[in-house]
Amino acid sequence: MINKKVTCCATLLFSTLAHATITLIPVTSPEFGLILSGASGRQFILGTNGNITGTHSADHISGQSAGHITVTDTTAPVTIEILANNIMTSGGLTVNKVLCSYNAGVQTQCDATALVVASVGNASLKLGLDISTNQVHSGGDTASVTMDINVTYQ
Image (cartoon, rainbow, N blue to C red):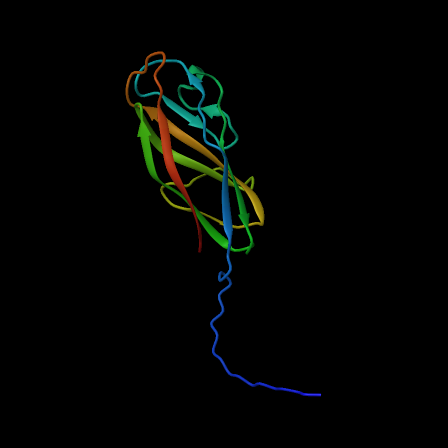
């Protein structure tokens, strides 16, 4: 029988995030649906629950849905930051706020400052928008909002 023994010394720096994997899978984008044509200055709030409110919500007809992203985190629970940025609009809209709800939590603005939460293995990130029109819209007009959603380990 042969027995070998090796003794080695090493200095290691351990990080809990060395093999961190967080996956974001877009399911749906925030969708306001069909809105009556009308004047500039109207406000519509698409909540993370998919409901439309705001000072001109009566002009909303149908077809709305909150945005939905599936979030998978192999290192949960850790603290993460969720931030919407690079917000772009077309067609006469102004974004007042981006709204986020992580894992059925409270709806919170997530574009001015990051939403900070403890991650879970599998969660839903729901997205909503508070918008105002900044031009008169006629029948057949379209408008859109694009943004980046960043999830960062804190």
